[in-house]
Structures are given as C-alpha cells and as structure tokens.
Length: 165
Image (tube, rainbow, N blue to C red; front, side, top):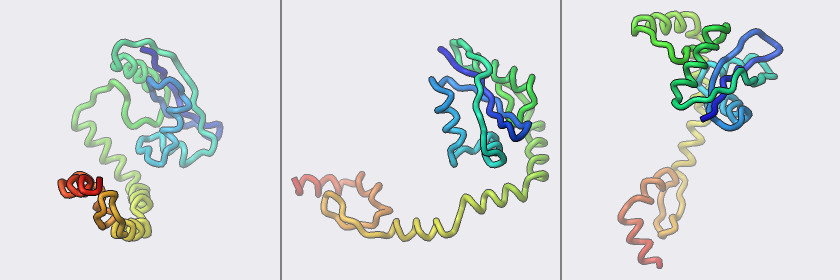
C-alpha cells in the first residue's frame, strides 16, 4: 500500500503538526483536519492561523499500517511538532498521567471555554423543540420527530406498513 507522512504548517508561525494517512489525496486529509469535529491537536493550528497548508514529507510504501505509523513517529521525534502523541511510541501509565496533569494545569481555562462553546444552551433549546415536533410517519402514525428513529424499528411500524400497502 501507499501512504503519506505530511506536515501541517503556516507562514504565520513556527508550529507544525506531523501526521500520516493512507488516503489517496492529501487535500482530503486536510479537509478532515479543518472540520469542526476535529479533536486532535491540529485544531490549534486552524484556530491560530488563517493559511494552514499541508505538505508531503515522504511517500511511504508499506505492508502494515504499523510501518506507516513508525515513519510518522520518526518525523515527529526529528522535528519539533505540536502533536500530543508520538506515533509508534510507548509510554508508561505514570508518564501519561503526569503529561495530562501538566496540560490540565496549563490549559484548564481554555478547556473550560471550549466546552462552553461546544455545548451552547441555544442549540440545546432548538434541539428540544425540534425533537418534540409532531410528524406523520410513512406508515401513518403521528409521533414526535425525536422518536422517529426508534419507531422505524418497531413491529407496530412494520404492521402499519403492511396495512397501508
């Protein structure tokens, strides 16, 4: 198989993120990093800089994904990167706990702020209203929008569909 070791970087700063992918195009991997659902450290690059770029460091031929991760780990150790985890690197549980503690003490305000943004009360209210909205299923039952998913699996739904046909 063919994979890539890449870096995300910006002209505006010195931070870089090293990653690897077996996707065919690096541009599709970049779009995953840009997604609002991205929870990895690369998210910080997109929050700090406007022009984050992706650059291929090496094209890697591999038989097992572990080989690709090993090559990624080599670059992460060689270059100063912002990655939380070094690929193909093992740490003791105690080292992990210490790293988490240090990060929490250094960034707890930022983490709280991010949690507040992700769980906006306005969105919760809008979702509650949407889930209570009454709809009519294809089988003829009237039910709340939020319970449609479960309803579609019930025996009642299947029996009503047979009656409708």
